[in-house]
Length: 270
Ligand SMILES: [Zn+2]
Image (tube, rainbow, N blue to C red; front, side, top):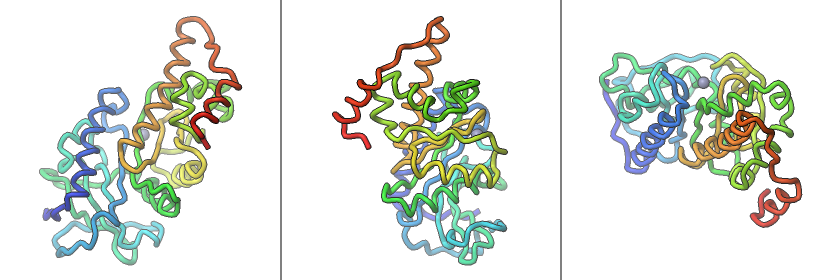
């Protein structure tokens, strides 16, 4: 399969993915092929001049028409996050055609017969379109399986109360309050890869930094993969501390409401 030549800005983003993938694997968040990543490269990639007939074309149906000509980096379906050490093998760059009847695979899948984007492509595509409308300039979406966040998403009461969930993890450590300022949204369990899950996530991420997919995992967006990873990592730290305290046989006190309000003021969190 022919590969397009990447410009240096795109290459840099992909290198960051490779570096972050190592951290995700080391944290134990990426068993087998768990997790996936996308980057909206439409602006960064510029005008792509290539012979499209030399690239594989995959048909899609019912994808939003706003995806016309959009270019995305996406991890491959069935590929392991740990194999992103060699991103040209475990991921691909796709471009939707004008009518959004399908997309071409422009890059990636080296040594693979048929690399295909993640099965969560619809979620990524819908979220990316929504992020384009936001002033935050987020281009990167990361879905992963942060262990403690998943654990807490099974909690019989906290999993049913978003406010209590956020106050619990925020109160465990000042950094959680500061670096996950908008908190997490708790989304009910839905079939992985489904449009229901995609639509809930789009909606949920408009007001929150992290979408927790109950009994499954979490998703965050950022200006690059590092920023998206940091949202998950810091939120997960709050879950981790809470659970460690419970495992040690006591319920943590947590920062008080006024201590957290003081933080919000001091760090101008909004
Ligand atoms: Zn998953």
